[in-house]
Image 1 (tube, rainbow, N blue to C red):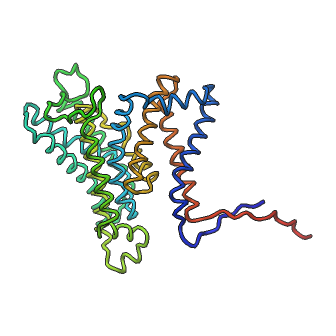
Image 2: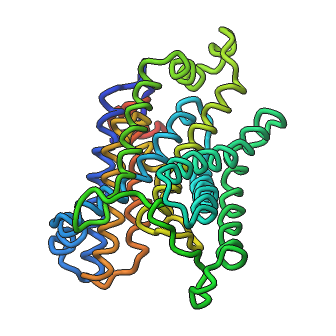
Image 3: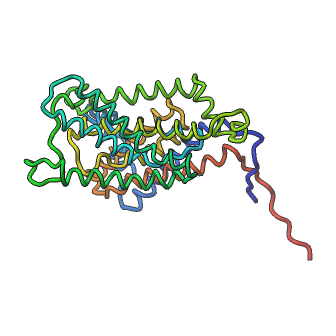
Length: 359
């Protein structure tokens, strides 16, 4: 029996929303096979990976703490992705946001002013936007590929941060470790949940989801971004500026990623270190697509991705598995999501067996 894919008259909305669920289920099947191949009891492994990390109040706090930067970055990236503006450098923009905000925190280390933290947030957003403006300028002025430029800038940002904490910003009393001095209390986000590390930074991603929903669903600019992504020729015909959509998409992603960097250094880290995140900027790309580029979907997708991070850490301690298991689950989720998305525009058709060729 032959199976062929037939183009749909129009994209299937049902397939679009079922695709993330199918991808998540297929990822669980891969996990079942993987744990069995490694000689682990799959049911015990699933409990350690998906249930145990959130079985306590501290675990729930960690889930929300890790979901915050993923949510912020993914909401910002989704603005550009809707218009086919492919910002792949959120990790670098997050790092530059951390550098800009960290510079403010170190400059006002002795200050007790309540303005230090808001100033750090503004500086972080400015740092992320400045880093995102580079590929935006090169795309609109010289038609450079923003995928390659934004990705390569990740390494420049990472090495810039490494240079600073190994050199001019290194803590002189830090026993030669590559890190800055600990930030003052005025530069730290207040704790929200006692006996956990969850801080007020979670309010910023939730605000970004609300603003993103208004932008996507209720604003003229959001409508123009959707048109530019779905029908570039029509957008050009009605006068929607292509350079403007590039700038909006890149700067929105940069601002959100920069603020995510502030959340990291003013929250769980409390200082500048050689790396500002464990790869949130890259994982946010998966979050954005699992959430169907919609702010509400991204909220739930970020919780799922956060659980994968926590599950990977739990599997390292409880099952003696390598840290790469987290990346494996993330990669499998993206792979199956892309595979499932095929059925949004195509539907399977089952035909009979081919007749034997006549002699």
